[in-house]
Length: 130
Image (tube, rainbow, N blue to C red; front, side):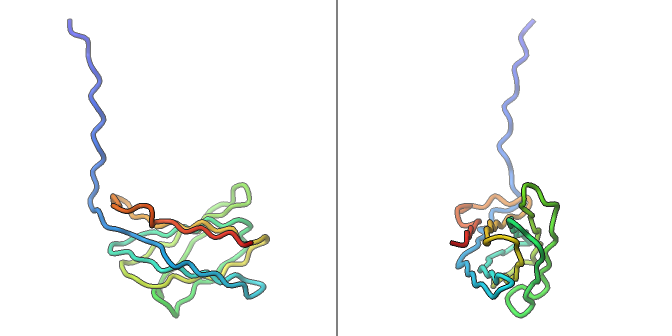
């Protein structure tokens, strides 16, 4: 009797291969909040996540490129909270004011379910207040 062999795992297939990006990050401190902006390119519906240390609250800016964007904070783990911000397709500035208990430590990322981004190196932006 022949020995069964494992079938190789199939390569992932993607419904799309759009280049999503976060660029030109901007930070300003306006005590008591930090104003953060990033240019988002999302030719398909996407999600920006903001991983924030010491998160206390946030306010979205509706006067810029994604006026209907909202962000929902998840649970806090090890003093880090992830805000999840679903976006409609578009290009523009995503802006948020953050109140944090520490110096601003922010990691932003854009992704879309089922998308094989051909340039994943432009999908993240990190800011650590000096």
